[in-house]
Length: 305
Image 1 (cartoon, rainbow, N blue to C red):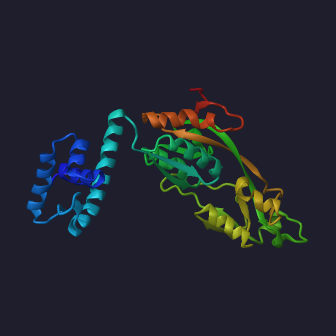
Image 2 (spheres, rainbow, N blue to C red):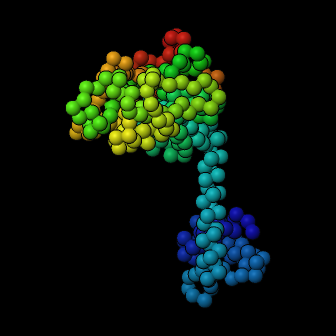
Image 3 (cartoon, rainbow, N blue to C red):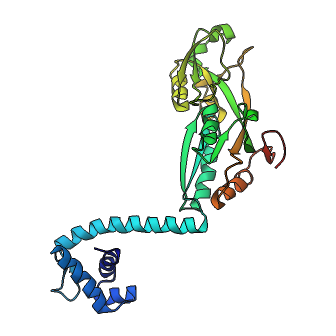
């Protein structure tokens, strides 16, 4: 069995006759007939019925062709990848996104961008704190979208994108008729996201010392626990703006706990060469979106690139 024989079967089915298939494949009709005859003789099976004006698949032929279609799909995908590689285009781009980033805005950009590059797969991972940058340094992703988190200590290049506001919130039912103080907050569990790094030093931000806490790994779980009145914690404003507007969640401001602002960067490893799709993403991400206070490309020692 050869790929040419499978392509011949496909052409006969699609074009409706041996002659039309021969024209489609730019071959002679006898060569088309011979290719099918050899395949049928090799496996002792009749793939096409010749009793009618147009050849039709037999029951065995239909089963065979259904399986053959999956083979052709894989072959064409492999062919596409080979062409991409020959042009230097990436087959896949991997991006790690910190949980506090403005995810909806980022995903809208990525949807637009990759619709123009349908043959480059997008692989996303969502991390917390140092875990985002660690994936980049370990070579597991091509880009990281993350706040600073001490990136001055890392040899990376970054584009300043935007700022995200972290709002400490708790369910309105928990504080009815109460003055919110640090002492009161210590009576409730602070819901904390665990740093997802594996071998770099773990860090935490905005933790109230002396209080009770519950540590989670997913920001969506953190929001749900706060909505269920099981504690309080900081969440990105974009994630809770609807609940704040409806007074379901109440913003917290005390002597030690208040909203904070984090700058978000698109980060890459300068030692790794960029392919054409990665370079385009790097060049366009900060200019196609309406990011406030764009500051251009810089290295982490503050030097303009």
